[in-house]
Length: 406
Image 1 (cartoon, rainbow, N blue to C red):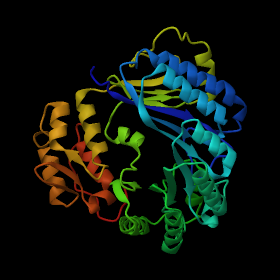
Image 2: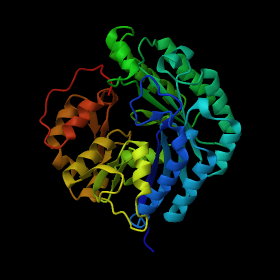
Image 3: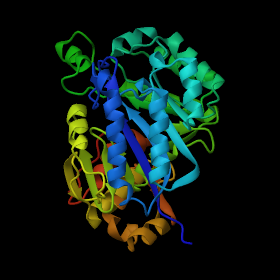
Image 4: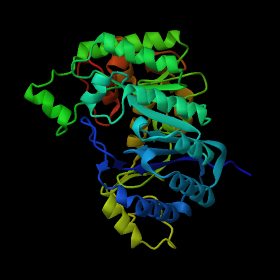
């Protein structure tokens, strides 16, 4: 029997106790009362897609947010049981849940592990209490350590820690202390992201008004290089621009995104890429619940056809599929393999992008050999300057100077 192609499932949980000062994600405070109905709606949406996605085997599931750790353990278990009933699933599939350290108790974590969640991603963001207050986080550094220890005691053997850098007023010393605190806990995975000041967020407004200093781009580059060096010495593999893992502990779900594979997003504002289409659900949780309550789950929902909760939909033509695959693949340390690219698209990458490859190699942003291309260390700092050159209909221009983070 032929093996089924693999699919990743994403559950968007948009509920929060309060909104962080930098957040512009699709998340909402004060809607906790909707959680039971929302979980029912997630099950309804799964049923709409079950027949259409039956030719896939689910290899990963990911609960993102928002704050997925606000879901009752019983709800997480029910959603995983429903998914296993409706879709073929890989043995030992990776199941990740994002958790805010201020929302988890030891009993919840133990029950979560028993429900089938085998990977925990803790949104620590910083081990500096000053920085946590600046960001508007609801937990302290001590609570972050307590949550990590409780997760270990609950049996989690695969834990990621999220950290933010390039914060307004952050110093190298503060960053060094946060990174050192994280490493003392010995997580299997670390995600390090530069803070992005999104418009109309409290933190962005504070910088615009002058009450906080803007992030220092040169300092951000120094922090990134410091982290890369320190994590390499500690045995972590820098497998993606913002992600490090111990050998064999790379996030399989996120690798689906970076390899431009198929994924099905469920929930308010969730995005999907499947069957030659990309689409996004309506962002409002209340509208999402109401629309699915009126849906007929007896009818299979085919990818590319508007569902009761579809907000936008776009066909992915071959040119866009190729560009996406190159841009996302270059985020990975392994880069783009010429042979794999040719098998997937029936064309040689150097023939398709000869001008871009020569230009970017010449300025030291990518490196290549007969097997493939990848970003250089300098290219990681200027990733966006590399990626935009592979967009369809891009007109080349000189690369930006060194020192700006991607």
